[in-house]
Image 1 (cartoon, rainbow, N blue to C red):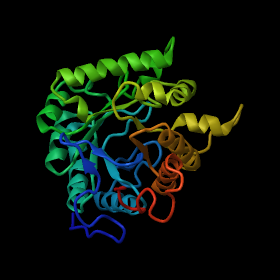
Image 2 (image 1 turned 90 degrees about the vertical axis):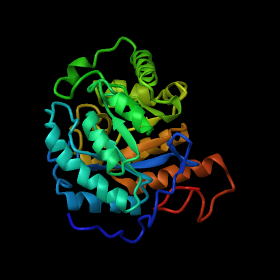
Image 3 (image 1 turned 90 degrees about the horizontal axis):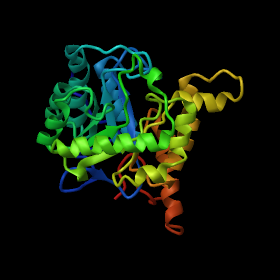
Image 4 (image 1 turned 45 degrees about the vertical axis):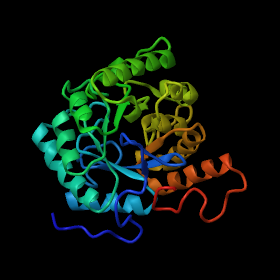
Length: 312
């Protein structure tokens, strides 16, 4: 891949988010995590950014539009998706992580494989976002612990190929909370400092629309786990169900961005650490409006930070 120049609006140097001693980025508002899928088959934009150079350009564009960090993944986790092999995931992910990190972007790697996480961290990634919370690969927690980087523990009940069959709950909130607590204990027991752990309720993963909406309605209870909360609702099926109404056909994934921004506003108002989205600009505006509501009278052109960089 040829060297990539930073476009106007992207950060010229190191990431601007403040860092705790153990490495968890933080902002004075809900952060926006932009999605770069280096895949041919992701549910919302499969194939669009499969070429590494296009993926890097897209990542930089997301930063210019207001993303605080960029999540790079090389394996689709849409319902029914089969896994790719390790060599192919590495081929997709590592060059994109390296180029974005070299351009000063704060990069998260979206992977369930410890080997991919390790190589991506060596290439400059600063955070590991494992949708399995360390369950898919027993080596993941030790790798993250040794690297001393932040780790996202998501609620997960199994691989995408059959996860819809696992969407069975008596009390979805109570069960997700209990399973997340177990995931937190597993990560901490494996050597990851609690201060570096983020939790994610796993919207759309082994859940139907009713489950997802219930979890969104109870974000305060999820925050009561005591760890920063990542909300990843972008373009997901439950939003399509909501927009379709009774008996209607869900709109295509790309027509769910306004609904995604509505979820962003709710999540930000409820104190989420970050939202993970495909279309950044509307969510970047939403988190700044939510922040302004928390401090009336502090509005103005600089409130919440300028678009394209983290708030300070």
